Image 1 (cartoon, rainbow, N blue to C red):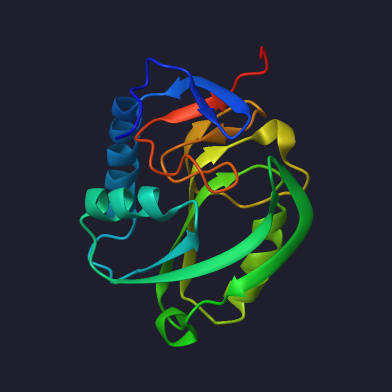
Image 2 (cartoon, rainbow, N blue to C red):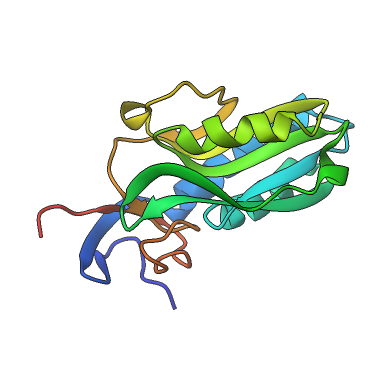
Length: 186
């Protein structure tokens, strides 16, 4: 059972405070889904989901959009603890046969430094999709080091570490229905 949004939580040695409620997330994801539906109406897109953090957001976004189409998963790694290591590793590549000639909805949990997308987007473009629509739940413009063409943003947030709704801290917190921010007062 997950903690309600009104409580502070502890994951490993760190404490987190409430940041975005489940209701705020649900409302904004519904809006993003409706926008995707308008942009890609009648299409048969492929949702490319960045694992592990975007899986909860992607499931809700896919349902909210009402769009039909394939889903494939990609896994990259750049984080260690609460910091990006700066070097992106492709652990699970996209399925080329699902990408070629398709409208792609690239679903990301969070764009902070931009380094993951800077490394991954050229790989995706090599697979010759018809179009790419990058949707991120969270964007940290203050932390962004490289430009990234983001099409839809759920929430613009400060450059603080967050967990919940798919995002984790060393494996914990993905199951939380809300998003919590690192509480530095501890």
